[in-house]
Length: 119
Ligand SMILES: [Zn+2]
Ligand SMILES: [Zn+2]
Image (cartoon, rainbow, N blue to C red):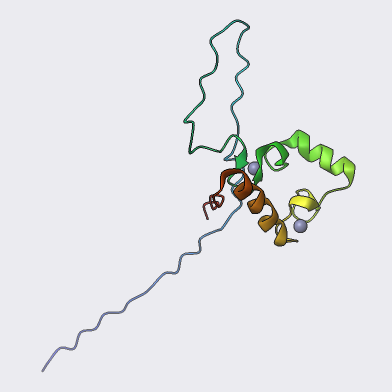
């Protein structure tokens, strides 16, 4: 008599949560004492992160998702997408064309396409 053996494979499917990655482009503003040494700029050339928010695909100085104060200002102006909690004028979810608009701004400035946000 022969023994038949078999393997039962159970595969588990793992659900990865594509959660919202909040934060990530926080800026560290160190209020230096007067007369202190000048702040040395971080890596000069390739790092545009000071101007560009890679995560949100807009210039940092208008990135309401990184700056709660800005967000409040946009809210006041009525430029606000309640659904996605960001200014309507920066809501790529409602208006994907906006992403291209900002990317074009980046390209005009640096002559290269903006870095893609991770994920
Ligand atoms: Zn941002
Ligand atoms: Zn929206």
